[in-house]
Amino acid sequence: MSNGELKLREKPVRIAIIGAGAVSDYHHVPGIGLDPRAKVVAVCDKDTQLVAERQEQWGVAKGALEVDEIVEDPEIDAVIIATPNFTHRSIAILAAQAGKHILCEKPLGSMRPRPRKCTWRPIGQA
Image 1 (spheres, one colour):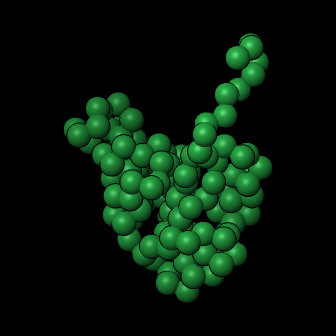
Image 2 (image 1 turned 120 degrees about the vertical axis):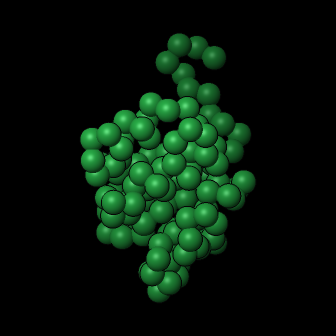
């Protein structure tokens, strides 16, 4: 492999979108679609109807109403957290404890000490 040349993974990074609202639909999903090294494989939201709509629109088989179902799935490598701000920290901690890669919308937490606890402590001590 020469300098500047990226080695593609055999399989794309399998991403779950947690929070199926407009930001995910307008930004995250189209952005992921531009890169063959990544693929949206699951959607999670508290709204049953929205999950079903996004599964059809985004072409994903897995839909979930609970975050636990997503983070415990070994077929998911990474999550994008696009939920209301007050939920970010708890979802990020669950995903980290499950060994998932995480992209979290800002802010990571609602009060200054909380994001620090989330980012500076080793997994298992969150």
